[in-house]
Image (cartoon, rainbow, N blue to C red; front, side, top):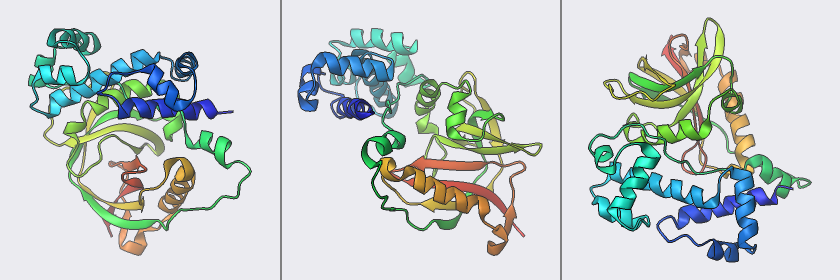
Length: 301
């Protein structure tokens, strides 16, 4: 039923792996075993954009990161990503981000980068690969450790009406736009942190969900439209952690194990008590590179 979700995800993988090459729908379709027309049609149906537009937005976004993070000449970056001249690259960059490449390099600011599309999830994997099969759990024991995070600022969105990732994006927040803008700010992430971060906060006894990026306490740059910037005090955190895992096969089991441990743990066994009134919980979800963790602020008894 969801075989085309998997196939379109393979197309996304192909685009990212060949982002600096001249894109060829024919070459891609030959590798996947379907006609160019059918590949293009299914891509558009599942992502809401044409394959051509997706490739263009990914190229210009990757080029923006190189402008921000390297000293390569603008012309060399333009040619690398398939633009015929610096002038054509500049026109495309202004169309995408309303700023010239030179101006952006001189003073980087939040811009709406195009994020990688994800159309094949653990849910789809279960329906196409695992249904009817006996589950072989690969979940490891949840590790519990202490981490100190210095005082910092958090730029993002706090939503008191939801308490989880899926509901957050269904409550009027555009995932592509928000994640794309935050991706353009990844160079500002608080040292030692992973960048885009979700989590929970508490207000008058009510629990809400947040999404954004932690930055240094002295950050005084631009705040993206629709987001806020708040100071978060220094704190020790109890970290409930599972190491890297296979996202498609084990995501639900890993998240369930970590969160069950995090929400049912007694911090007194470690000489702490929860300290969540003015601080916030963090949720790190980078399956293949980091793993999954829930961080809850604590203070010593």
